[in-house]
Amino acid sequence: MQGMVGPTLEIARIQSEINRLFESLLELKQMGEEAEPRWMPNTDILDGPETLTLLVELPGISLADLDLQADGGNIIRSGEQ
Image (cartoon, rainbow, N blue to C red; front, top):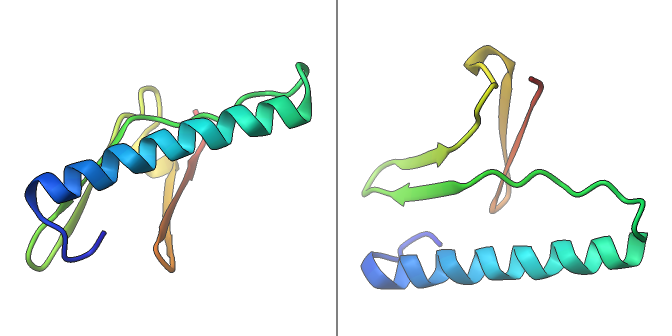
């Protein structure tokens, strides 16, 4: 989403969220009813001229237990409560 601004960035974010929801539903259907759903916290990405700010709702997780990694165009977050 680099280089996008204003409404274009918001539309891309919404499309990404919709795609992620459908992918999750398909995964659950393929895995069966016993499958445990993935946890996908609400996330906002603010693209500044020289910075990228990631806002993630992580109730119950301390900053010390949070791990963020960048992999190509993906940000991978993990942590334990």
